[in-house]
Image 1 (cartoon, one colour):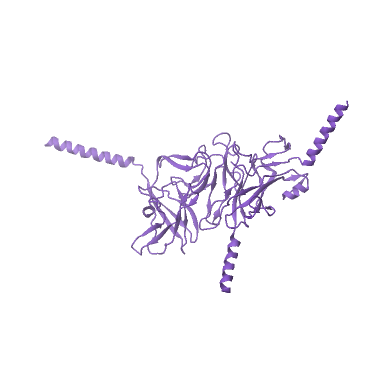
Image 2 (image 1 turned 45 degrees about the vertical axis):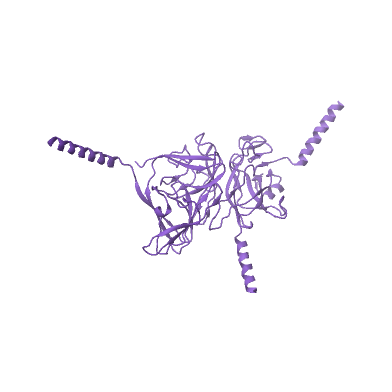
Length: 253
Length: 206
């Protein structure tokens, strides 16, 4: 009996130790990111955090009291080169919840994973706070970018603010830039696109700024490309292969 | 009824005020091995500072040359060629790197409907000659500076800058926007040919 108790105690201790070690070494980083879309404005945004199901109804519910009804999300289809059917928020009444509605028959029409961008149009009379909740994506990440001259809205898969850069620019977002790639950022203040960023040369071959880098009419001495905010996104017109992987190896440690 | 007509007219007038299209004025990446050359190249050799550029070379970066986008409306009754003169659009600017300009968004106010079609060409000129700076292509031509014009091209659509779904400024398209600056004038070519013929005649006489 005594031996049995000892073995049981040891087993529980081992399990507890294993659990505590697992907690010590857990690298999951859960958090939230809040973005404010001004009243009457369009803004290019992205989902910066991951959840098991990235349906808008889970990751981005708005107020259900009617005050945010009509806030609209536009996704862009790189294949057709057109915006998809709009997704609009409708509250069911205070305390009753709400739903993102769309005429798009695709069952994943409201699922937006980290890495894809979209427009938010705040047609309400007040600023709207969007709060994304989820986990920071880590490990070896791959974000497919449509190429062959396709246009798409993309974003970093991790909540990190930096220059778009290219694979040879340490500290940048390591975008797989090729000569002829064009990137457009949207200016919330002017409600128009900023001057485009165009990439020349081959990443890492020669001298940055002389032989390769991003060209921009407004910042001729900066070759790092646009600085993207957390939860920001951009349009990219991508040359090269039909699908290109934007790879990152990311850890919060 | 009259009120309705006035209202409709007013609405359409408003739409026209906001009609416009956007183009990304850049020849970056528009040249491929299989397409026409979209670079800015030199028709004649030039020297900038201590560097000499041969005829056919890409034009130097910096303020030596200026380029500008020109636009003419698309007329559906004459779909193969523009029916109105090309007009200059802003901004104009210099080459960012060898043979390449990247001047950002050009907004063409006259394009109807928003994001509609249009004819385009790119003109390039020597920015200054003998201490005189040229703000326009025509000034450069008048002064005998080096100039060049791209082939004209039709864009099947431009960017629509208007909400709720603003589309990005459109690219000029593969192979478009290339210029040879300083192509010898036909008259000069003719003189050269005449000189060559005269020399041949002289040699025969000998």
